[in-house]
Length: 457
Image 1 (cartoon, rainbow, N blue to C red):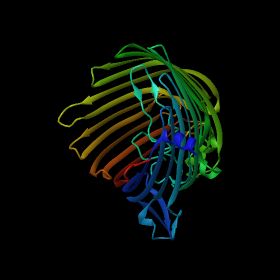
Image 2: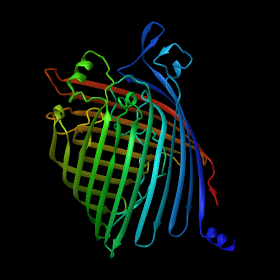
Image 3: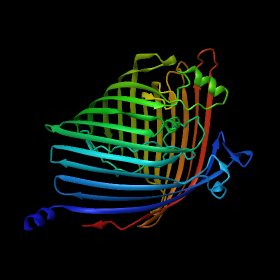
Image 4: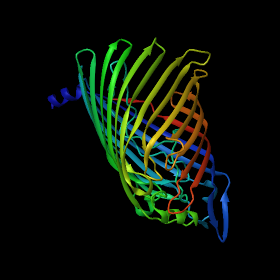
């Protein structure tokens, strides 16, 4: 008993809990088609509500960290239709459960971590889909700075990152996701750090009808990073990344002529089709800290892609890879942080499963207006490369403006607007002409977050 008390005395822990509620007004183009009785109608402006909670237990000592999180969420789409039960397809609230567990060990020179996260429940495609929960990695030593991991196991939350939409009618989807990951790292001497991470993830709809809306994806991925500090403000790094992706979803319009014909006739065929792709990237990079206020990081390299192309033929391609990141601390009238990132890397299309080089640019500005008010601006874009020789070029532009008002230590109010426009062209096959599909979503929202005081034990 005494020995148990001595061991327990070496650990300290915290418990955090939050509850959030959010409401929004939404415009989708093309508009959602519904049937009310015998009438065909379109939803010009929709409204949604969502409620979520999160609980996190964190226990640590000098060398070990343990975390356990649970986060359920409820979404009520199309509030204006909830009182009318004669609507087809039916609109019902959806419940999604998410959770995670993690363990991490470290000493002065080495560390390793194991994480597991997952989600199960229903999501609605009426509200912009934000993807599967990611397995957080342990902090990585880069030779100059350390990036910390976020709260593990949190379910997907709306974010301004460009997200592909689907061409199929909006409806509820039975959804599941899981990600198992590990990471390890060590230092060699005083200048060199090496880290290795890997994961196996799966996500998507849990049935043939569901995978036509949210494709099922599964596969392993791994990253090796070696960083050498040249001076207190400079570092060189080498990154090798590889992954295998299996996708099972709607028949890609580029690869299957019958799907093109059905799309032209506006007939939706729920025909799951499976493809796979392999990618590998090797990059050399340079990072420099400029004074105490800014950081610049750039890397270039090559990537290999082995996956489907037009007409379903698998081909091996070598593509360029590029990353540029700039961070600036602003000490102006409104102090804040500016972050700009640009990257070019092979990406799998959710609609065609074709892997192609894609350029993504994101600029984020966070500013503190007063001690209790902060604002955030985000602009982003995505473009398939090359232009216009890509089989199915994708173009997307989005932006978010959000203000957060801190009422006290336990309560925040947020008000924001999020918009995203996307266009994708489908190449001609089997004598069918090329087609272009365009979608637009505008979302104005207001929300409240309540936090319980941190419990220490």
